[in-house]
Length: 500
Image 1 (cartoon, rainbow, N blue to C red):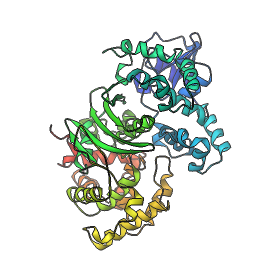
Image 2 (image 1 turned 60 degrees about the vertical axis):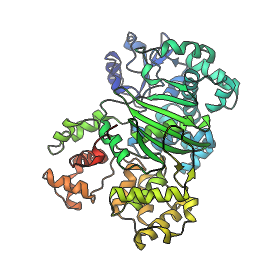
Image 3 (image 1 turned 135 degrees about the horizontal axis):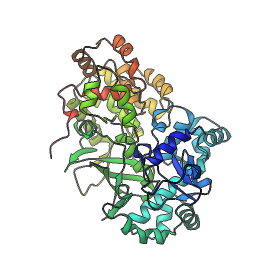
Image 4 (image 1 turned 45 degrees about the horizontal axis):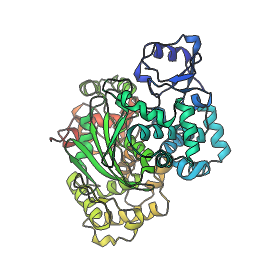
C-alpha cells in the first residue's frame, strides 16, 4: 500500500471532505477510524494511521467512529477510473457479487485464481475480498437498522449475513454498539444538522429512502436532464422532480426514484426483496457517477483553453451511466442513426411487447426491460427499422446471450470493445458510447458523434474524427467528461432539467 502520509495528515487537519472515501484515518489512542472530514478535534500526527479501505481499518482492530460515520461517504473514485484487476474486483464487490457467488465466483468472473485475487487485493488494500464484502455488509446492516423497523433476524439476512450470530458479532465489532443500541441512537444521529445526517435514510410504507452522498460540485442539469430526455416509457420517467425507473436485481426487482438535492441525491427504493438493497444502491450510485472526483476532472479539462469556459460555467458534470449494461447496449443499437425520440419509441415497443410487467403504485412505470433470453425469441421482422439494423440488434442479442460479448461493471474495457466491434453493424460510435455509459470507462470518446463534432466546430477545434481524437489527447483520461461539456454547447433537452 502506497499512502502519502504527509498529504493525508494535511487533509485530516483541514477536515477536507474532498478526501472522504479516498482513505480512512485510524487513531491509535481511541481505537477508532474516521473519514478525513470528521468534525472531532484532529489527533496528533504521530497517533494517526491511514488505510485505503474501511475493511483494512477493521482488520487492524479499529472500529467505526460514531460521530462521522465513515462508511457513509462516497466511494473511492479510483475504482471507477481504473481498469486493472483490483479496480474491477472492487466494482463487482460493491455490486454484491461476493455475497451472491462467494470469492470463487468473483475470481472466476475476473479470470484469476482465488489465490492471485486475494494476493493483489491484500497488497493494495490491506484486506481480502471476504473482508471487503464484510465491511460492505456491515454498512448495509447499519442502514437497515437505522432506517427500518424490520426485526433483527430478518434484517440480518437482508444485509447478506449467513446467520444472526455473525450479524450481531460484526455490528458489535465494527461499531462498538449492539444492533439494538444502534437503532436507539438513530433518531438522535439523524436529526437535521447532526454530523453524518446527510448520508442516512428513512423507511415509509414499504419504501426505503436513502440519501446518496457525492463529492461537490455536481451539475444536476446534464445528469438528470440526459436521463429524463432519453427515458424509455414503461421503464423510465421524470415525475415530480425525480428520475424514476425499474431495476432488475439478483433476487427480484425494484422501482427507484432519484431526486437531486444540494447536499445529496435522495434515493427512494421500493424493493421486492430486501436482500437486493446493497446492489440497488450500488447501481444507483454507478448510474449517477456519484463516486467521481469532479475537482480532479475539472482541473485537467479546465486547463484546456477550449474547454475552460464550459467548465467554469457548469462545473461538476458527471457521465450518466446505466443500471443494466446489456439493456444500454441494445438501446444504443436501436438509436443508431435516428433521433432521440425515435430511439425511445423503438425501445418502448420492445418493452411493451417483451418486458416483464411490474406494479408501480406511485407512478407510471409498467415493465422491466426485457432480458436477452426474451429478446432472443424476438422475430426481427417485427421491428420497424431498416433491415440492416434489425440484423444488428439480433446479432447483439445473440452475442450477449452466448456471452460472446461480456458487459458488466467488472469487465475488461478493451476486451469488451473488441467483442462489440465484431458484432455486425456495430461501429465506433456505438462501441465508444457503450464503453462510456455501460462500462464506465472515463476516457471513452465518441469522436464520430454529430453533437461532439458540431461543438468542436463552435469551439474552433478540428471536426474530423481523426483530428479531433488527436486534439483530445490533453483531456485524457477524462475524455468521457469532456464529451459532457461538448454536448452542453448545443441547445438540446439533455442539457436541462425538465420542468415540474
